Figure 1 (cartoon, helix red, strand yellow):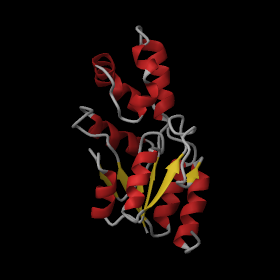
Figure 2 (cartoon, helix red, strand yellow; figure 1 turned 30 degrees about the horizontal axis):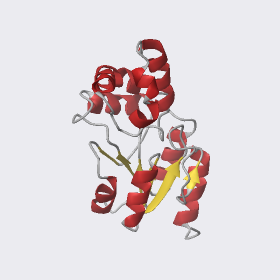
Figure 3 (cartoon, rainbow, N blue to C red; figure 1 turned 120 degrees about the vertical axis):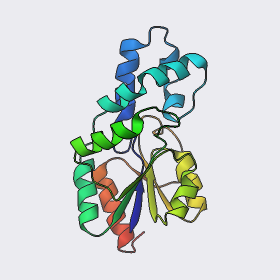
Length: 188
C-alpha cells in the first residue's frame, strides 16, 4: 500500500515548537493571536509573514518527532508498504527547509520511500502518485483527498482538535498503525 504522510503536526510536533518560539520571541503578540491560522498555512498579515519567514527554520529544527512515529514508519516500510512524505514545506515558502528536513529525517531515523516538497494541492499530488491513504492534520486536505476517492485520515493536533468532521481521526502513531493495518487487511 502507498501511504502519504504530512510532516508538521503528524510526524513532528511543530505546533508545540512554534508555541514555544512565539512565547519567547513574539514581542507584539501578533503572531500568537494567529497561531491556528499559521499552522493551517494561512498568513493573515505582514507581521506574521515576516515572523514566520525569519523563524520557520528554527521552529522546524526544534520540533520534536512525535512519539512512535519513526518506529511505526519503519514497521510499515518493513511490511511492504511505501511511504510518501507529502508536505507543503519546501523552498517556495520556506527557504532552506528542504536541506533542513532531509538532514532532520536522517538524524531522527525517519525512513520513507519518497518525499514530495511544495505540495499545496495534496489531493492532486496523491492521485498523481497513486497514494492509497493520506494522513494529514488538515481537515481540508483530508476532505479534498477523499473527493479523489483516496482514503484520508486526520491526525489530531492542536489546530484541528475542535473541528467537527466525519473524517476518521487518529490521536497517535500507534492508533494510526492499527488503522492502516486494518485498511490493508480490507477491514475499513
